Image (cartoon, rainbow over all chains, first blue to last red; front, side):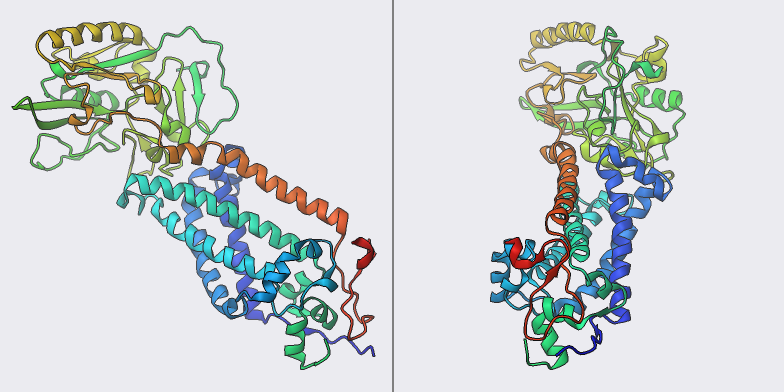
Length: 211
Length: 304
């Protein structure tokens, strides 16, 4: 039954480039943001040329990240609707974590974990953009009431925490599930990977009726 | 002032030197009831600190400039209010209150950009300032201002340079009516009590000292004829304290936020250690089965 494993295309160049622009900007925005979040990480500001440069650059990196993310989100929007199978998948989180993939319901282009991350990212990115503008100095912060500015700073830190935590899980999951990193680097996944992890998607793109 | 005299430092999680614990806290006492609104203090402040605010426009009241800014560290605020069916012209010298528990210092993310001396003076170190404006968010009195020229935050230093060599602040030195006094905080409280008593004997039943406990007391205090209504004096807050939002933002969220990241990283590592990577072996998977093979656990069923 074995046949040569021709790779399947999962992401084209434009999608990969888009993803990695978001990723690079995320790393820059996160490092500069963390420098301002906790004194013990203030030294991270040196990576950006010191405290004032960190303060100047951080919002621009954030806004750029948001713009690239917006394009990415619009591209993948239609693949990320959460359905009943996804809820079942989430209920079986212990099977997911224990690599008992054979017990899981068949997955389409994205599994429920990926979809959940997608929506968390959207909420976080929007919150970060809006709250960030509210206390962006020297341009915008003075135009808003101080109570709102204070709340924005708190919410900004909170959503940044959720975003960074989410990305940590995202990066680990990409390492954990072998072949996933390659999908975003070369754009290709093996048929076996696709059949195993995204069976419904595999059948869609190959026209293969067997599960 | 020598660094030995720094008792608190922004964005610093360890304890600064505490050896000098017998430095008496200082205070500036502003007796609103004897202030005539001459603005000599404003001029003295500009002169000593070499500040030159832009000449402003008349905005319909005597306040000039209209607001504090990077060149205006103290400002006379004129309020026309009705009290006991009489018009009262309340004049308050506005500026940094030098809180014992300073919100600006708490909010500042740049180590050493805001310091508090053992004598209680809260001082900005502009060379460490990054211009983020968090001090503005932290301040319960709306005092710090960021310069449009250099994006650094400025405010009254309580003439820390003069105080360090045993002189009183410039505004105190110049006040022609003695409405501004300076000395040990204890002495100022004692003097204020006399003033309050005098005001009470003259019919100001609610006269009192403004030294708000919400911020741990302040090193700039007011004698007010209407201490029960500080808002009359150009919205001097009745019970100032660091905003709970700022407390939360700069309080436990910081250490716990970092701990959370650490736990996620640790959790991921131990998940890898326990379960290994999820590997689909290429090519040898017959179509029709979806069983993964794992390098560490063999067949996935064995891991259940």
